[in-house]
Length: 179
Length: 52
Image (cartoon, rainbow over the protein chains, first blue to last red):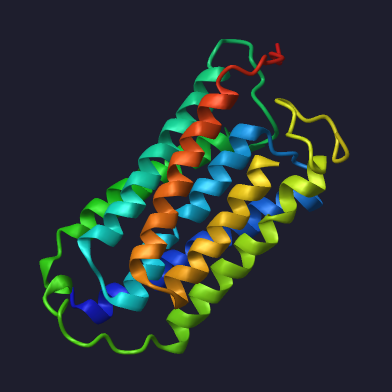
């Protein structure tokens, strides 16, 4: 995999994260799926996953950029594992509604584990790091669009906790949009 | 409130990663990651209303 192909792969990853952030925000506003603190933290960590790909697109692929995303994915997997364990007892209905049989936090755990595996697999391709000292070419419109889309959606998500609860901290289990 | 601040901080870190100096972007990332761990530990002691 060349550095150009790696940049394209990073742009695709950003589009994936943008889709996920948009879906979570839409579920909150349209389906009234109120996020609890752990749910918000998982959404925040999905957004934080985007810093590595943005740096890869701007400065060229580097192992340190992938390491940032790996650290975030491990923390995200820990947070979603905690939430899965909170609802592990038999008879517990879980929090929120299920999608294809799994609750959103279970999907988040699957997503973070998939991110760890994909990041590790991407690090196997050494040729993408060969041109690290060369001048990095300006990213194309596809990559620029991915970066601005994920920045825009993260900025939009600033309103997410405010819409739910205003300025006070979110309750453990929110009961309405106005708390 | 802390979640709003975290989303805002990530937006700023993304903008710095895209337009600003690389060391500053990585520094902001580290601060946010530590803040996320602190938020997780803060909410680890929440009283939970079990749903069964």
